[in-house]
Amino acid sequence: MSANNPDLTPIPWLDSARQQLFTTWLDSCATTFELDLNTLTLASADASFRRYFRLFSSKEPTKSYIIMDAPPDKENCDAFISVATLLKNAGLLVPEILHWSPDVGFMLITDLGTKTLMQHIGADLDLSIPYLTPPLKPFIQSIDSLVLLQHASTPGVLPAYDEALLSRELSLFPEWYLSKHKGISLSTEHQNTLDSSFKLIIKSNLSAPNVFVHRDFMTRNLMISADPDETRLGVLDFQDAVMGPITYDIASLMRDAFCTWSEEFVLDVTVRYWERIRSTGIIDGNGWSEDFGEFWRAVEWMGLQRHLKVAGIFARLTLRDHKPKYLADTPRFLNYIRNTAQRYRELFPLIKMIDVLEGTTHDQAFSFGRL
Image (tube, rainbow, N blue to C red; front, side, top):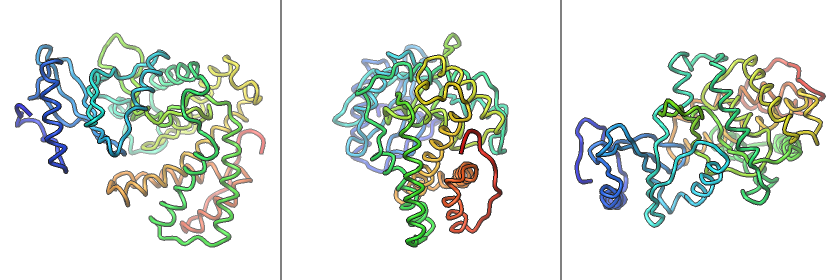
């Protein structure tokens, strides 16, 4: 870099060669985009190999930019670029790509702000307390973005969230959480229970109408815009978007990976979302537009798919990628799994098996909709 500000935390680099590539690339951008290199700092790092830096304009001190560090041997940014264009055309607020160097894996994009929806909520609520009721307004804004995305859905544009992908995701739970993290060798009976339960889950999820699916639509990936005149939430981390079940993103939003909302609030927001999409006719073919209980059942089963997958992913992040912080939230996902599975008799064998392996018990509950 051309200069360094001692008041800012230095950006750590494990690979000195990549650090030199970045320095050269950044110097080449500095004049064109009027960047103040003295303001460079780490903005965030996610569960993938991507990192994000922030720096400001040398001409407009309040104007900031984001740099994505995505090593080309580990991250494919073509999907990020194509999905960003798709979402922008659909009317969503997403980062604008200003400069992209695919050979080195550095990208300069616009900055949507410094406050995620989770941070915004956390300013008034202690997110470590379970079963919170957050403000409704930002979740209505979230629904607005989600409906915009789904309204733009066009077959053949995004990869299909098909049976093969659903199966691969579910396999992460026995492979990484049960086997590698917990050290459990599954018996034939346990494996049969998993196989039969997974088939039921996949069948339920494949029955849902297909729309554009963000695939990680949650409070950490929604941004409060720094522009006071902007009423939309910014949307991030969309590069894994697919064409799949309409139930997925609302399940992601309401069964958050890092905090737990009250059941009354989850139902309230989900009903509001259901009222919005039933007016579009998307869910008419399933009978869901007349029966919220059936729609809720489908959302729960889709959420179960995600909870099993994420428990496996968080274990993999710890064991393979040396990112142990995610595993601390695994109990939340096991709680989601229990609370869902115990409400549907078809899933009783699954929850019984998990409780035996975890050494826990559960109380039987009831479900919405027909069993």
